[in-house]
Image (cartoon, rainbow, N blue to C red; front, side, top):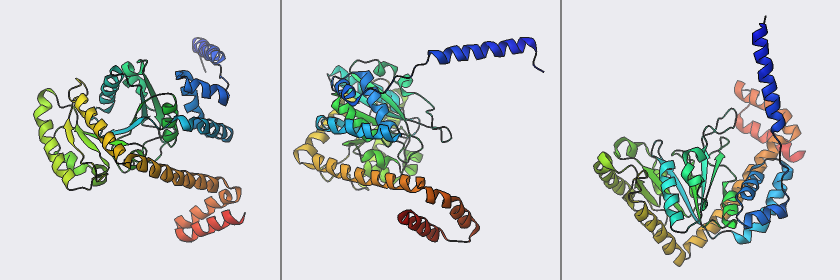
Length: 353
């Protein structure tokens, strides 16, 4: 039995919760013309609402999002898109904040699209990148947007590509995309940016053995971070090992040999030199027409990727298919039917109904 004192505390908590709930007002989604005007005038609140709209899974929001993107598409495409990945603990957030502040001091407008680790059960973000990049988030020339991965392959939200377009239409001329960890998912990020930077730690050794060859093949540059103080000598040695490893892989472009640099995100050492190389890369590929071709190919691959997603979504939500799924899964588990036969039956059901 609950004591009177405990019941009073419960009542107080309930009253506090109710009062808190009554203070929460859900703003209606602005109209497409309002969002269009807000994004093009670089209004942060409008940009945030526009991103929320394209991230929505509601069919009516998806239709509005595509209408907005169609209007903004002619105003996008001018930004320098840079993907940044690295092993856990490499200091990506500190490095990105230092790089972002360096660029805004030089007159750039920088958008940072960071991808939080996301709970596979709840789909909610575990950490907020605005708290990890507080100084950059408060910079009037910067925009930091954390996006949950929703458990998707690539460690990056499937709408990040469209978010890039929105940021470009809002006048940001540099877009940095941070990914989660290092793995096969990084190919998704590399396929939406102009330059792919891989951050590594001093003391290559075990790291070099653990990193996948495919990641090195995606890299347009490797930067050994935390190369300050007592780590400076180890960072230089690690850089030499990575240079050797890169010689054994095919570069992402025949026009560019990926350099290996050292830097320190905490102190800013080497960051200016690193960005100079990023700009050299863009200049070289732009002059040769490769940057434009690369973006065209990325857009086509994006189309096919979205088509795959939509078809899977339609298949899973098809009423007749949904009624068969549990039965097919059970028969595959028990060995009554093969996975191939189950797939054939599900697709046949989908196409015939």
